[in-house]
Image 1: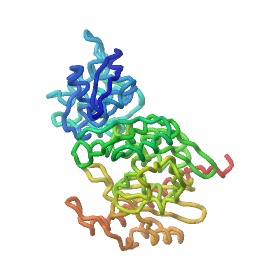
Image 2: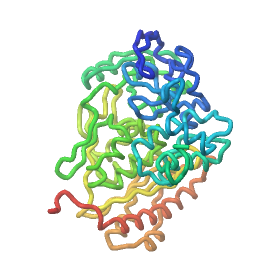
Image 3: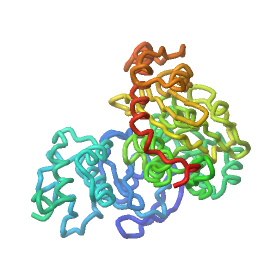
Image 4: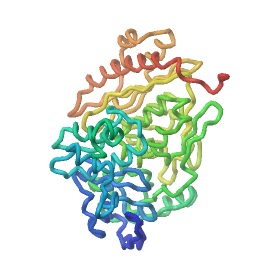
Length: 163
Length: 277
């Protein structure tokens, strides 16, 4: 019924695809472009594992149509840092502060924090916990994720991001 | 999700024509309710008319005694707007409490109001702040806009375009959320105008309602302790697996008193456009 030939700007590159109206952004990323770092945890807009940036803002790609992303700047976890590093400060802090265990939720959490922390450099622990409201982690209990986020903002006295 | 025809008009007129002429057409705002509903195959429109390309539906203006918000303005934009924060901080806080950060980056005020979910937050603000809703064909007062659960006065080819909130002297919004969905089990918005208080309740019943007994008590100078003693009005209170109707009815009392407390705590801080700086 609805097929669209569209150009997508993904991780700094123009990519073409023919997509159906009902294709979700997350499926475009994973199936058409092989960007499987963006995960699907719940498929119901709750877990946040599919979080990517659209025009620099964190959104849940399981709840956006691929056609809606055409012509916009999409960044996935693969595009956050170069293939040979260095890691993005949020990735580095998550590594240094043990912000992950199984790692399934991690791409979504990193993308959420990369957006949030860049916009709120003075965020405190409460604000960080509120920002993580839409990202579920079943391993860590969140404490080390929050520690990592604080370390990004205060690298010197937290000993995280610049280790 | 079943297949559909996707359209992205550039103007309100084009969108209205698409809604009128398209097969089984529905407008798509932020999609935070509609897309999950379609994914669950609970809804299967033949045509989706995506409103995100219509610039005229976005933006916030402060005009005289009102804040006018374009229907496609996202929750994040309302929450982050300095003028909203200065003039109606309770509305700013309410917008920042909807869903989660990612949802607020997509969801829109017009989508939320048009959907008329009985547990949505914005309707409480709209009702308490005496909102004036401008559609593609007319302007209606908030009391005429909501007809019931998930039902508004909007015709199938009529779009909500703009929402004008009357700026109060002071306002406060407090809610108790369902811990899983985040939707309000009960939310109470209190606004104080020169002519008196307006109190609106969402989440508790099958429709949003004014709590006129609490309004009268506040007009007479009631504090939070006195507000706690006021009986919530007769309503069709919602009963579900999360809470029986009696529980929600009591929440109206408790959340209402908390809102009074917050209002009194923040009262002095809100400037009014008619006040000289």
